[in-house]
Figure 1: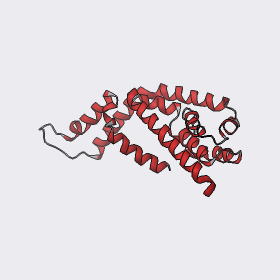
Figure 2: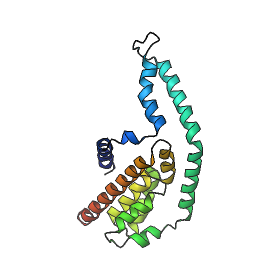
Figure 3: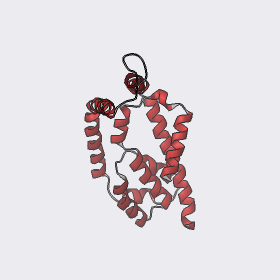
Figure 4: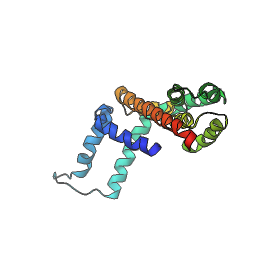
Length: 189
């Protein structure tokens, strides 16, 4: 399900020309990096050495870290507050009825929370054992892993608001569709 969402998302982003909504410094770096590194003083193309590639990559890394370090700390702090104050049984109690709206709401609730792929497995098990339907659980867990507040804050540094809205909107739609699909298949699995 995750691979399918990623492949379809890549096709969707290519289809809408999402690269035009990257922050200007990213577009400039992408557009100018090959020309800056691959042309010698005489104006002829040259093959980059491993050292040149390393120097370029290090410079880009330092530039990015200087721009985003504070957003990483803020995002992780917000995620930790949410993780610490949302009761464990809240999701199963409020989204476990199997109503059609429970999947899109589970995705919306999961998006701001933070979890990594391995950390979500016990959460998934707990939600399933407490009666949350398979599709709703899957949609919630995918959204918690794919788009969290720390991630959104980091992505804001390279994406314009329009691209972030398209990205998060796509995730909400695809995870909702996957949740509904797995809820309908759940009794047959």
